[in-house]
Image 1 (cartoon, one colour):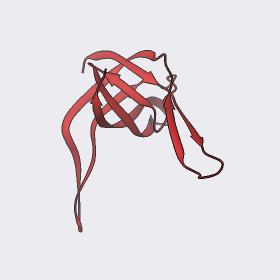
Image 2 (cartoon, one colour; image 1 turned 120 degrees about the horizontal axis):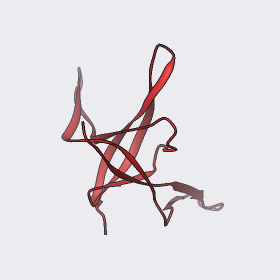
Image 3 (spheres, helix red, strand yellow; image 1 turned 45 degrees about the vertical axis):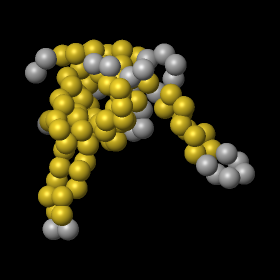
Image 4 (tube, one colour; image 1 turned 60 degrees about the vertical axis):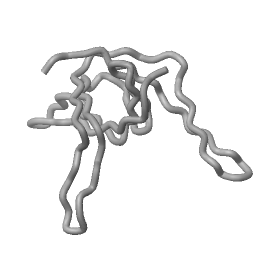
Length: 108
């Protein structure tokens, strides 16, 4: 696995007090970290009801990196939305964070 540069834009959610509509806004400046990016055509899981598409890629980052669900990640001029973040552990020790990503479009 080859490490690559991953830009993380923090998401801030705000809610309209009258309508309750949620608005997402991403930080103007990214935090750039080094991590492993794994791109696939689509991550799929087979269930009795059928196939569920789960995401488009994974990124693996160090446990010290702050990354959360709904943050935006940019790798190789492509934007991804973080679907979930799981800290992988072995023998009680945190090894790395695994993030499932969904492709949202090319970076402008």
